[in-house]
Image 1 (cartoon, rainbow, N blue to C red):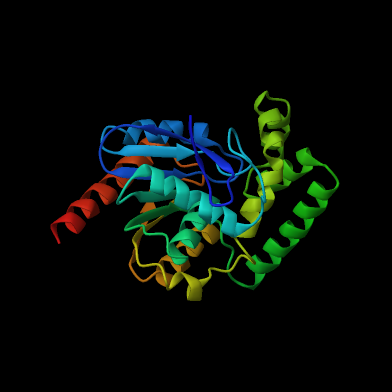
Image 2 (image 1 turned 90 degrees about the vertical axis):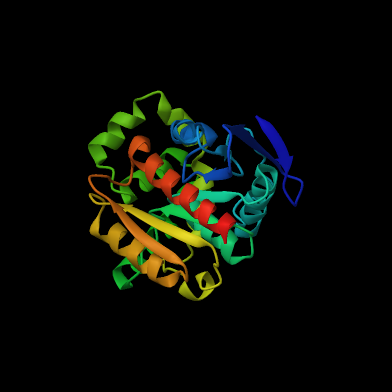
Length: 266
């Protein structure tokens, strides 16, 4: 992987593949650039796809982790390395990061996000507050396994599946990333869609959800799309929070390729 220094000199590792207009993929919680590899491979025939290890993950550094501003600076550095006119796709909490960066002035003309996990509404905000409190107590106690389990169950993974995951080889890798769950938690604030802040997002934005995702997740993406000045919403039939790359890739390719053409022609 190549490396670029963020604004605070933290090294951020990234990988570039394919040819065409630059497109940066931003991973969600407990993911590294490797997790985006299947989607990147499907998009590479039409785009120069850049994946990266977010701060505290994989081959990237971890100075000042948990500060949303630092993660915005990291993404800005990667977008700069990707090239002029880069588009951005953010998965889950990576979508929240992409939106925060765009609201902060990152020059992104085209943006797509898949189910940023906001939890608007009274019950949703209470749920987020309980999860945040529990997460920080687990991490403070050094209970990395408990933090991962909390995240998985909070996002809808049933306890039996979590129990099987704990016995699988992948669990050690998840525990190694557990501290970064606090970074993703910080990106989501209190769980409300920050409509006033996102009113500053000028990028054309595609907000996507899965048709089989929870009612809360589907409603949240509608609320988000309504808050963005230049957004449209799309539901992928039969998909859930863990969306199939082969279903998502053509949707993203059509959006980015068509809107790049329109932007260049105007």
